Image (cartoon, rainbow, N blue to C red; front, top):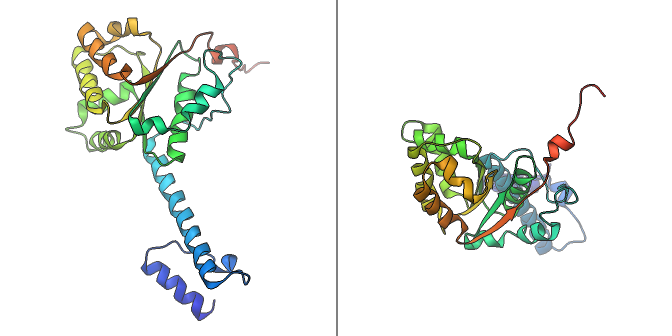
Length: 243
């Protein structure tokens, strides 16, 4: 490494820029200004890559799912063109919500996860949580540093995915906590909900007709709703130990 390269490396460190393999960027056909542009473009790319990794780590997303991997032939209640339109994520800027309703294993979490990854790739902050875990965090935020930290991430996210709404019953106090959280996020943060219950059955697991109406009123005010039907994908495509 010559003195000029050493100087550039030191100046980059002083400016907290990413260390680069300068030899890979050197091109004698470029003018000095073009060389600077190449250097800065690579710095921007690496910074965006690092920021994206931080967003992924904070999101707590399940294993990556993609829009293209979804079996639209099996699940005909939603079309690929509909999901692709949502994949531009511009609806997040207007705090619109998306709800996927239907029985277990019809693709609700797959689609929610795929849209969450699309949002992260486009620069939005995302947080993924099941309703059961969210309620536990809401209940313990005052005494648990971990829960308090997670709630802070939820509240700062551009998009929060609340998975498995309706799988477990909640108490009256827990329903109130959920209502308070939804009210806080209303028209400020986009929410994706996955639920195995139709709206008519939400009062059953929330245990209160008034709270249910208030929650749904806020969720569906600006919302795209998908009712997924059919048999469960995992059951139909189950794998056996003994073939």
